[in-house]
Length: 448
Image (cartoon, rainbow, N blue to C red; front, side):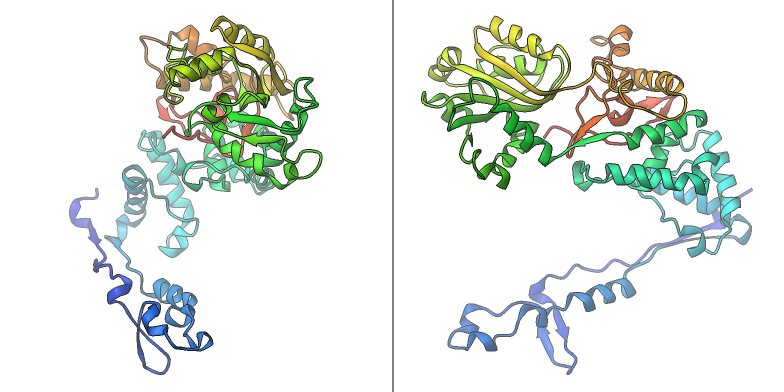
């Protein structure tokens, strides 16, 4: 039995954070230098070549070495017979309260044997102590095998271009923690699935812009106004940056896709107008965006910018325009045209450069038992949706329709900065599965 007297926590001393104004550096010749650059007054009348470079005031390499040697450490100490249990308890507390995780070398650093700690961690997992922290749950025997490491590395290499919120990247630890949540009989297939996720890149987007100009209404247009669908927090605004890509500055594309705000595009009548976005599923969002701009209520409870002024609302109703998407689900084109037309708008056409397969998972070869994996993805996806959606507006039937991604089309595609909701739910959704917190592989960005 371990009691409180067996554990002692030694907190590191805290020091006041100094600014560059009151910080000094001792040079090699023992000269004390202020940590700041010279002022204009100090440099006035001097030969610019004789001014001391900034690196002489602050040598980054030396500062980094000093930080590494002198950084503050805290310690959790225990009675000799309680070391392993206290170590695991500390790992759990830091993960649950602060989202911290120990490095792979934690056992060697603490001079402890790995196997006893893993056994204690497994017992803690069985007792439900790791339900909220999937990152530190003990890995399955399959994921621990050296032969599995190659498959893990291949999947991480595939997913590395994905950059989520806060600079998130997929690492070996993240991939293993995600796959570890599946039943062990499906974990090999889960890794193969991750390896086949396609990341839609900047190059892909530029190519989709080029192909949009193959549409008859744009084929002969030397210039056109391209307007992102939505508000500044919507993904189309991020893609609008790539309209300035160097590839689109070359002939015959130079100047043909001019990025504009909606007000500017609707205030002119010389250029064809193209509203663009990255993807389309059910077309409910595009209807909501245009309804919001017209001051009406759309089918989805989402914000996509303030309504247009009354004169521009009327211009929007009178303007014939094109809607362009890089990728989309089958049937989305006809759905979008019908929805917008019913709103009194005049879409010339809705262009989907690349139509995705009706079932993304069925369309890719996957070693192992695909049916077994798909059933596991269904069970996981349903519980994730059920645990994150309100009971009053999301019936079980509606949740089942989204268990393999919204629309249940099992897509395996993501953009470099976010995941469309029609991709497989277990890839991107948080929630709980079997009453345990689920760690998504590619978490979706929060709207801000």
